[in-house]
Amino acid sequence: MEENNVKKGKSKKKLERTLLTGFQPTGIITLGNYLGTVQNCLKYQDSFNSIFFIADLHSLTVRRDPKELNKASMSFYAQLLACGITPQLKELETADSKKISKTLLFFQSHVPQVSELQWILNCYAAIGELERMTQFKDKSAKHEDNINMGLLDYPVLMASDILAYQTDLVPVGVDQKQHLELTRDLAIRFNHIYGDIFRVPEPIIAKSGAKIYSLQDPTAKMSKSDPNPNATISIIDSEQDIVKKFKRAVTDSGSEIVMREDKPGISNLITIYSCITGKTVEDVEKEFAGSGYGNFKVQVGEAVAAKFKPIREEVERLLTDETYLETLAKESAKVARRIAKKTLDNVQKKVGLVKF
Ligand code: TYM
Image 1 (cartoon, helix red, strand yellow):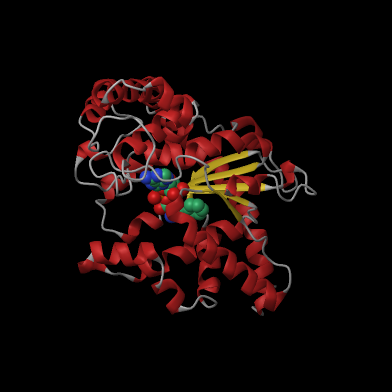
Image 2 (cartoon, protein in one colour):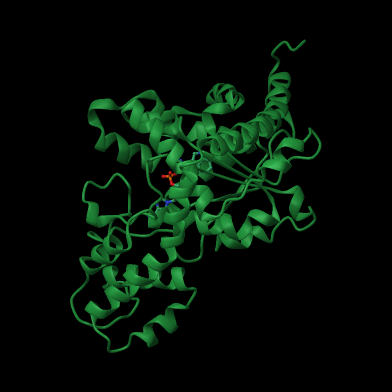
């Protein structure tokens, strides 16, 4: 339903509107990330001022090996570029305070204004509403030995990311919807007290693919933290591995290839195939009527492998040119800091901090 949000706000020209989203650098872009969010980023990036970033601060809420995190973050940056996120170096270098470059891709931690804004927003967020967040409850249960403040405060940093850049639209998967609702509440609460400070963002949630399930447990979200490597597909998996994992995918009883509630495994595969090929669910059902699960799983695997092959090759190429990646990230962050500073200055003034 929320893809309709793109059409709202027609009075503002599209390019005056800002689209933003972030990704935690957990090493790989999964098929879930790709279908749930990256595809929408690619679909809309040219129609808006598009801001994309690697949410490295968010990923500190669970313990990570520093070297691994550092490497994973650079690799993630290259993976997003390889998928087709396209900041233009020339445009970035000539962007001034009035004209911002159309697409930015940077590291969250390179824009300290967002963390400064987070402190202020913290003072307007209730502990009760943060404790109610599903992701906080899930992650606390998973990391019982490390229920830290960051885990609880995670959605306020996310709100700060979104509000600092005066974002209109946020492409995300279903799992982030509740955080978006909190962001909207915070923006409205703040605007109610201090006037029209923040744009109130709308989510863009893909009509199909907004929640891709594990290949080993089709009732659980596909997640990069899943310890079973057969559960998750990554955009940089080899073609053989992708096909192998699909062959091993858990399916349901019966043999019919139809999208139905009592067939979560096959429904997940139909969604994946439909999103990758652009075919409708009805067409997929027709195409595979009477074909049997074994053949269908191979066909889905091959379609996904063919889609990701050029992306994997491009990642390998990009990772040999770290200077280019670094320059692009630095120049993007420069523009991002300028936008965030404008919002932060305004907020600091409005809440009464002394500004010289
Ligand atoms: P992250 O890194 O967990 O996921 C990145 C994006 O991928 C979507 N996603 C999925 N979609 C469909 N099926 C799945 N199985 C699946 N798994 C993940 C997520 O919904 C997300 O859109 N907190 C965010 C990062 C973030 C952010 C932001 C996003 C930080 N600040 C501001 C938007 C705006 C996160 O951890 O996403």
